[in-house]
Length: 241
Image (cartoon, rainbow, N blue to C red):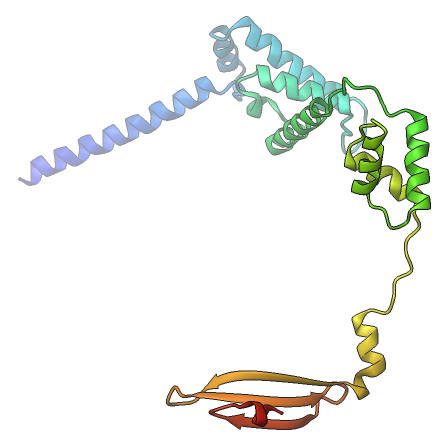
């Protein structure tokens, strides 16, 4: 029994070491940046010509950047675009990239994607731009009629068979209308008149035995001093007054 167990353990150990060795060999053969020149050359023999050309172009572009003889390479917009396009054609671009991080290249790709769709979404409007006479007319209406909003001006233009969207009118209104002087806000009012103002509240609470109690209190705003407190179970008009 002991002999059989010893044989099984030996076989298990041999199989484990064999799989580990096979895994390391396969990793070296499939990695294009092998430390061995011979293994790297043999691996390149089984790769397509387009893959090799793209990888060489990616490496050449990185060498161009490094030849600028600076401590930290500065990527121009053209450099970023070329690196992203070449990395797209190389399956093992993460191993080939050595002057930057793969996350940086992915970030450039996302930025380029956003820039592309931002430019594409703008588009060109088939309708002609607004005539200068109409712009002057909108500004005069907004300046001479301070209480008119964009919707009112749009309605007046429709009466003259002039069709302009509301947002366009708002854009030209902002250029001629000055900001109205702001009046006294609530905080300023309280600061100036708090000593003369009382606040009251009427609320319902529940006691320990779940019975309703009604409380009415008055406080002075400036000092937060309680002026009056009243509590009852049955509020009436006379009690509240």
